[in-house]
Length: 573
Image (cartoon, rainbow, N blue to C red; front, top):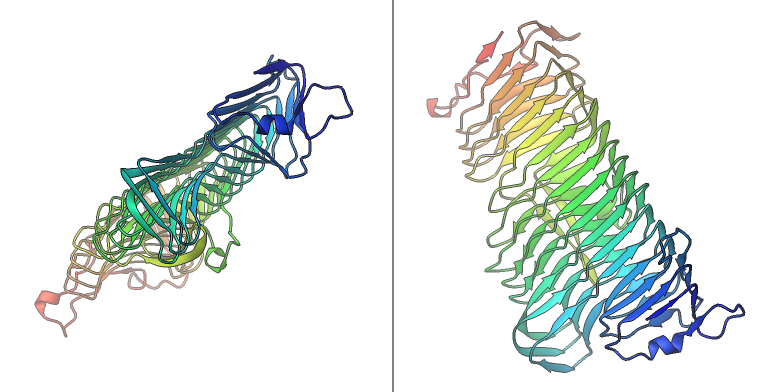
């Protein structure tokens, strides 16, 4: 332990007279040494010719505390292109921090044709804890990797290898960060063989800005297994809290198992809370098992975004599949086996929710519910709650794979509430079932005006293409407006009954090709439309009667009575 006013770490003696520790001295310490450096003012790591300070692979903890007296004078500084490398935990604090890359990853890498034997093994990435006032950081890597190259063989006497990504905790008045990677994964090259099971768990990532903003790049706390009969553990939790705005790139807390008889764990929770705006790219907390037999997927992790301002999706230019509005994915999919529940998604904002798609499907269990809350007059623009999608899934050290989500299963419940007006602008909500279970219901509530507009994109739809009943649609508002070919519809193309539509509003306005209809083209019954509008129904210019806008087809005489369509409006007052 060294405690002084200022500390400089350098390759050679600097020109100033500050107490200096040579890089070679720190790198020469024994592996079991706990390093503690404390300064009442500054700790500085000068530029390093090899761009890294290597503190050993099996250390317990390395601590750098600037401004240890807490008077607000004392910074930790290093070159942003340099790396602190250690196999243990790292703790850094100071009034202001300027950091390069922090690497506490734990790796087992077997080259071609190598063999390793072990009795028991744990490969935890070290934890990283950083706190200060104003923080500017480079990349942080606490991954736990097991990589078996071509023809490598790995076997142990232990039942399970534990591979844990290290946790990352960062706190400051404002944060500007690079990539943070706490993934746990096992990768096989061609003909690689592993005779053991793995418990892979991504590390947790917690970022807190106590006075201002958080800006970060790719955050990855996922778990990935590429083994026959492999087990991917749970994704880590990602939690960001800011008194100002939050701006992020791709956040990934998923669990993904590939190859035969694989088991995926639970996706980790993703929680973003901002007193200002939230802008983000893709959020993945799904559980996915891509295999040929005897597979299982865990539960999708919950996604919760709360902003006192706006929530906005950012287009990701990562590749062609990401060049679109970002998807929040909390689904649970097993291609040939049992899946868990889809994770719930909750979005709360004051003004706008823009440029998002939400996918919470489960292929074999309950899909996640979606709840949207408005703190004022809320507008949903280019925002879709969907039940099917072609997605690109990232794999460590490998190319992305493309999957189709939505061939089976049923949607969860969708609830949209606002304390003010609600506007759906180029937005849609889908409630579908493709199995024997019923689809979730859609409920929209506002004490003001609910408006659907902008061409055929704005729509609320409930459909069944199997035995399950389609979900019901209910809208409660003081004023309901459908315009510009917007649509509220319920339909069935199979045995299941179409959903019912209930509109409770003193005043209903339908104009410019707006539509409300319930149909059946299968043997299932059509849904019922109930409209309670005690004050007024306004039909816009060009609307001659109810036929184009409120439609429940009569009996098709070419079909038998068993296939009869639902009749007319149940209530219209």
